[in-house]
Length: 187
Image 1 (cartoon, rainbow, N blue to C red):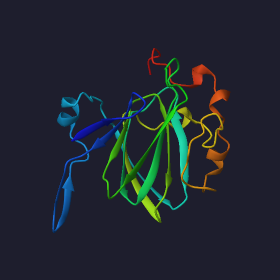
Image 2: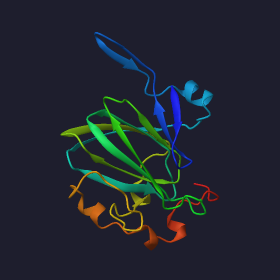
Image 3: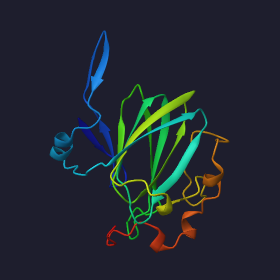
Image 4: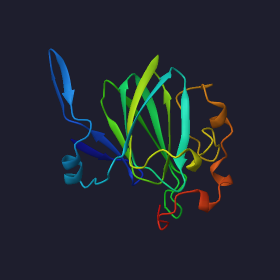
């Protein structure tokens, strides 16, 4: 397993070791001891699977009082995965990182708590698997408008397919600090 830093602390690219031959391939998508040995110790409590068609954009989502670490991987297809720093007081607050994840590159993105997350589908369809360190709590969910002009996210999809809920999310500047991630606040 190879761990690659991004421009924002708290967002890492994980490159699992892939064993491949004429039959196909095998890889460990998560191994607690290997993650701990790499300094990545977080407990995951929920696994999710998302299916979307080409042009779909989901996000940018987060939970306010129960922030989640996430380990994201494209099982089939290709996505552009985005993490936005919403950690109050962070030197990279409001900045974003985008990573291409696909069934071909087999990369994963690991987000520590304190990031809004979203992705858009570049292939005909995509299955996305992700682990979460906190359970999903509908009353605690929040988000940021995918097209917030202050962030200038360079989405590779024009005219994306978006849910009504996601199209009504506020811009980052409209969210008060208590509705973002505050590292000193206990979940």
